[in-house]
Length: 137
Image (cartoon, rainbow, N blue to C red; front, side, top):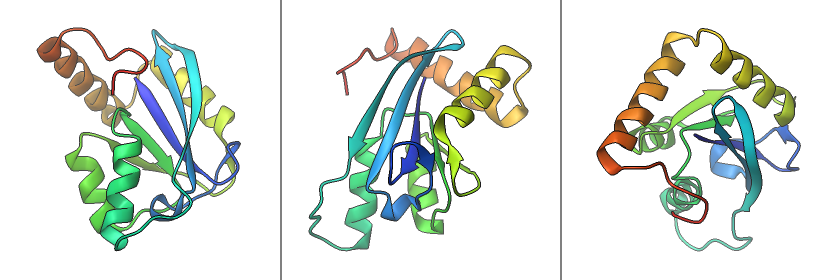
């Protein structure tokens, strides 16, 4: 599973989805972090507000969860239609701390919302074969 964090510094969840200059993406497999990377939004984006949202969605479309501080209603609808779950957290939460909390949830009994997300991901893997490997987006 890949998880994105809306950030402006790469260290903290501190950005509104539609204004995030970058996303830090972690890949988690079997309850541990496999890799992480930063995905930057191009500095000069032409187009209207919806185009800016679509660009951000495309940038993280291989992610299952996206942690953020805020997201507008239309952007949230677009994100969930793409089978990603937006998760609001307090501004300034350290990304590493949030990853740790997520790993704890995965190792224990995940809450219903996370179990549902994990089941949907498993169903997608069964339909499409193996999970996406790095670079297959």
